Amino acid sequence: MKKEFSQKIGFSFISLCMFLTVLFLFSIIFFIVVNGIRVISWEFLTQMPKEAMTAGGIAPAIVGTFYLTLGSIIFSLPLGIACAIYLCEYSPKSYVVNIIRFSINNLAGVPSVVFGLFGLTIFVKYLGFGVSILSGSLTLAILVLPLIISASNEAILAVPQSLREASLSLGATKWQTIKKVVLPTALPGILTGIILSIGRTAGETAPILFTAAVFYLKGYPKSIFSEVMALPYHIYALMTEGLYPDKQVKIAFGCALILLFLVLLFSSVAIYLRNKHKNIYGYGN
Amino acid sequence: MDMGTKEICKVSYFDSIKIRAEDINFFYGKKHALKDINLNILKNQVTAIIGPSGCGKTTFIRILNRMHELIPDALLTGRIFLDGQDILSSCIDPTEVRRRVGMVFQKPNPFPKSIFENVSYGLKVNGIRDKNFIEDKVVEALKKSALWDEVKDRLDDNALKLSGGQQQRLCIARCLAVKPEVILFDEPCASLDPISTAKIEELIVELKKNYTIIIVTHNMQQAARVSDYTAFFLLGELIEFGRTGDIFKSPQDKRTEDYITGRFG
Ligand SMILES: Nc1ncnc2c1ncn2[C@@H]1O[C@H](COP(=O)(O)OP(=O)(O)OP(=O)(O)O)[C@@H](O)[C@H]1O
Ligand SMILES: [Mg+2]
Image (cartoon, rainbow over all chains, first blue to last red; front, side, top):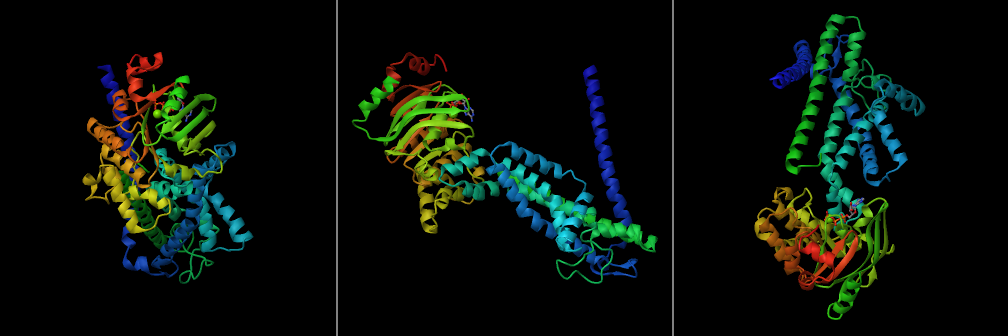
């Protein structure tokens, strides 16, 4: 009797926690949708801002976020995967490697504004890339590198040793084994990590604050050395600057909705891919 | 140990030696897993390796195609000759050794690729590009491993959709496709039902015409059914080696007798 009673209490408590969590999540989404949906229109998505940010669209910010995200993935992907391969397959199990792993994990916990300052010092100033897509992408790339490394790392470690042995026992070299068996098998897991990190990059504000983003730009960026507008920074700017807060807040919610939509879209794709491959392969993620 | 040597001298009169293990000692860190193993494996014969769990059977056969090199902190002394050539020597390419000495593992481990890609994998990594040649070899290997009839209509299906027994025969086909000279089977039927087991046993007997076969097994009947020679390992030592009939009918060592009659192990 007593056991059943405490089980009931425990279960109710867990349900309550779950309910609260879901409630928070949905109220955030609900709040943003309700406030943002009114400004969303085709023009909002495709036109330039007008009348000192109080009308028109947010197209350059969407495009800017796209460039920055794409750029960061281009830089971080090869580096991250190569690094994970080295750590999993080549590095001797030594003290030094443990330190490297430890550092990478710690890098993931560094506040993003610190990456912003780093990017400002190194890319913008020292290397002279200026406030530009290039500087912003590189900064974001460093930010997501730990994510990509640890996702790839896990995916590679999840590839059963028996597959490596099977490959080697057929006369394959280590490199062939990695290229033809380990990486393809780990791919769904790696992809998931990448897509999640795309979501993360798209929403980051602090790293691009000093390295890439500007409040307003006439026209679209022309090269990787151009400054850009970006969704998260645009929201920040609309809420903190300008002369018409009332009108700006509405647009800010519109931006937030678009950003939220993009991030959710990326996450859903990641989850879809992961599940799909889990079903076929049974392992490898 | 004496037994082994005596038997080797006797049999080498009428059979030729494919693999010769000389004074093999193997250590996992401090653990002495194989002790002074001397053993000859004869060409076109099936040699069964039996012994209680943990006696070093897997360790021994993995040395024969240099798979032991994947283990960190392992130490090996002694020599392995394949057709008279010392394959442990550092000037020999391990991938070449592994192509000549194939291996089928205890648990089926097909790649998460299509059936066709599984079988063609070994050919491709060994530099063969000719599509028609590869196709022929894949069909041939699948036929030899008695899997062809079951998969001929679905070569593009993922190999993981096959049953455990089919997967194991696929792994055998994958191994056969690269035309090894020796095939090492590490308890190939451990996770299979009696029907799949019977199929694989038939296959092993069939394969012996063209290959030299070593099979690790915990199943005494299986050893008796498929093998020509049997080696009995205990705690890292080779206790007895001889013709399977002799070992099962009149074992020379008390420990061998105890093991095969099921008194311990
Ligand atoms: N990677 C390893 N590191 C350390 N010790 C190991 C390792 N692999 C095996 N051993 C030890 O070496 C001994 C021989 O192991 P091995 O796997 O060769 O036994 P086996 O005869 O194949 O046993 P089984 O019949 O259970 O497969 C065992 O005592 C085992 O604990
Ligand atoms: Mg074993």
